[in-house]
Image (tube, helix red, strand yellow):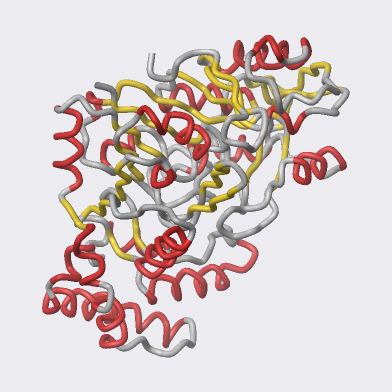
Amino acid sequence: MPAIVIIGAQWGDEGKGKATDLLGSRIDYVVKFNGGNNAGHTVVVGDEKYALHLLPSGILSPGVIPVIANGVVIDIEVLFDELTALVARGVDVSRLLVSSNAHVITQYHRTLDKVTERFLGKRQIGTTGRGIGPAYADKINRVGIRIQDLFDENILRQKVEGALHQKNHLLVKIYNRRAIQIDEIVDDLLAYAERLRPMVADTSLLLNQALDAGKIVLFEGGQATMLDVDHGTYPFVTSSNSTSGGAATGSGVAPNRIDRVIGIVKAYTTRVGAGPFPTELHDESGEFLRSKGFEFGTTTGRPRRTGWYDAPIARYSARINGVTDFVMTKLDVLTGLSVIPVCVAYEVDGKRVDEVPASQSDFHHAKPIYEEFPGWEEDITGARTFEDLPANAQSYVLAIEAMSGSRISAIGVGPDREAIIVRHDLLD
């Protein structure tokens, strides 16, 4: 049975939670395989809106087993705050599984993230300050704390001591901050151990056993392709692999078990933080998209940068991820525009470039080449078939599909759970 990966095909915030929710009644496991609480999903269920930051959005689907896998970095305080908030709203969170190999975000990671970003001044990356990057850096430097370490106080203390030996020198001598005490960190982490213990498992083993048993497993990526640490707009990226390949390393499920890759795109483009953004708008059109699309970060509340749809980025994402299906979200936001430009290529040093430039410098200076499409005035939030859409909306979708590298199998036409048009079965 299928293993399915859902990834953002732009710079994040595309509506991955909506796509996961669309498949919720048909899947058995939803796995978060990368990132931390530096991004979020917003899922609307009836009159209820849920903002999830660390938890997989599948936790809202009855019967689905949500999994936080080994590729995630976990702020345990945030995890329990989020679980408590869901329980208060009547959501069953008892099925959650957490990988024993996942790394932990500590107080010193959050502190270093904030002081380092301030230290960079004009060269800031635009991080959320939640300790994600420093936690991944410790993982790669082999001085990280893993979930399993919380159940052995001696090992935990040794690892915290080793990590703080260097970090306190940085905090005190470079950043003029106070040293962090070992007991402070150890006691904080140990306080969560017994509450966390029932959730912890060898999730790689369980997921492979689930696939062997014919279960459907959905891998839900945080952030998006253009924020991938290897394939995104480096250095203005996240600290993990948010492309489909990250689903394998971030979960312990082999790549040859992945059957489908679903890329999520907005009908336009947004990004947060610093970095190149060829189609970015600084005019009334940009504010129209931001206001009507409510483009503010689920986790940070920051206003998102807005721009027109970028077809070369979609093609790049299709290639990097092996996208089998696109889900387009927020088509309804474009209602009311008389003309809708789409970036079909770039101009770099006076030459037309049809694909995303390999050089970061070229991409930074790339100017969009637009093709314009007629807009529509009709309200499309009630559309449930492709034929229900106005002719101009249909033409827009078909044009985007032709230039994006894969079929558009579903179209979001509103924030509600049922406000979606399905053109092709995502499991077929």
